[in-house]
Image (cartoon, rainbow, N blue to C red):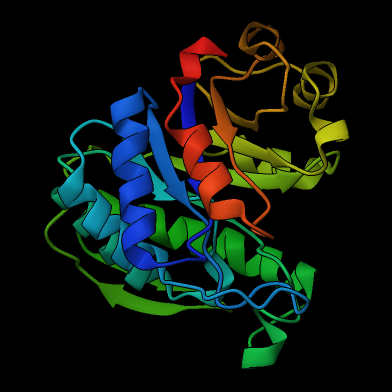
Length: 261
């Protein structure tokens, strides 16, 4: 089992980088960042760009896996994501991971900017974008003409990780279509309420888990890591709801060794 923190970059940018440093020092295996433009209307936090922060974190750490949890691919140009991920992979010495999903909320992070907000349309763009990102990351000339994207490119350099960095796909439990999408890639990030993501419900959702496939599950408080491992999880993610005095409380949690439970 591996352990990671998923930090909302909704505070001072330097504080996010310091959290990442402290997470590595405490023994966490990964540091990931939320990817939003805005967030809830009742909170309105300061929101920083995760990719810029990940570059700073890559320079400030040596061991932890790095990426977003999750990037809504339909809101970004896949070739830009491929270039950002490749650069992060080089900066970090081959530690980058790409996590993608539909993204939330559909109004604040999509419709308010004139981006597609319909979930079915965004799901189609996600599938198309994943195929394109995969081909761009693997190197060599790419010709891709579809309803969503028209690309003829040969991006260089390739990532350090070959044939490319891992790609994880998020999906809300108990929906099956995101799970089927994730099975075509390197891992799944089940999301939803804590009640839906107990070890028992996670095992039921996953069904037959293929070998070598990452299952990146949120870690419910007080539940032993072994129970999640038995359910099929390979990563446990510690995160928080960024309301109230969340920064200090979450930073304190990050400073604790995850292997102590």
